[in-house]
Length: 210
Image 1 (tube, rainbow, N blue to C red):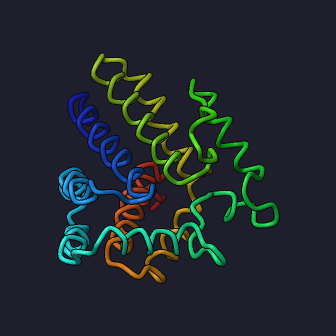
Image 2 (cartoon, one colour):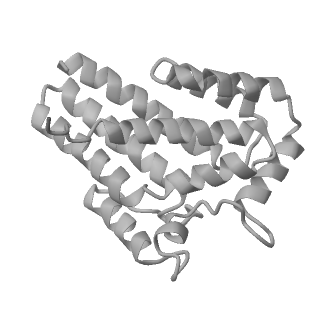
Image 3 (cartoon, rainbow, N blue to C red):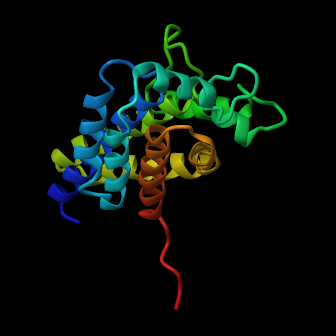
């Protein structure tokens, strides 16, 4: 791809990751605008997600109903259907804040980022990891726009490495949501998350030998 294609592609992915991260925080009155923004960003690169957005819009749930499904899926109180923390899946013996959490934190620090004390979430919360992917895509776009291909490729490789090592858990996570969500809204969020991450990882797959 040429520099302009790399810039545009990285910016589109960056926007999609940033918007998806918002869906994993408690829903608020701006949820319809968030649906529209993600659809505008994601459908052009993943047209297969269009039915998800249609179902999300047609559902017309109250905010209380969305909050109820969010709480049941991600918070509990007794059994959490789809814990939004990578260590639950990658370090099942240790649970939240396991060794995989420390690795994710190291990835952030190596890229010049840290989780502020007032963030309110662990480093391996799905929203934080999606926001980190947004950051890496933005850095790739900036480097490509400046004509620094080596630096752009550096951040592109970081994206692939982070997805492969630190976000493999999102496959089981999104499968749980699709199977157990009580709303088309959260089933759609899971479908969009899976589509973006799996296709992005596929960009880094090595070609098979004949």
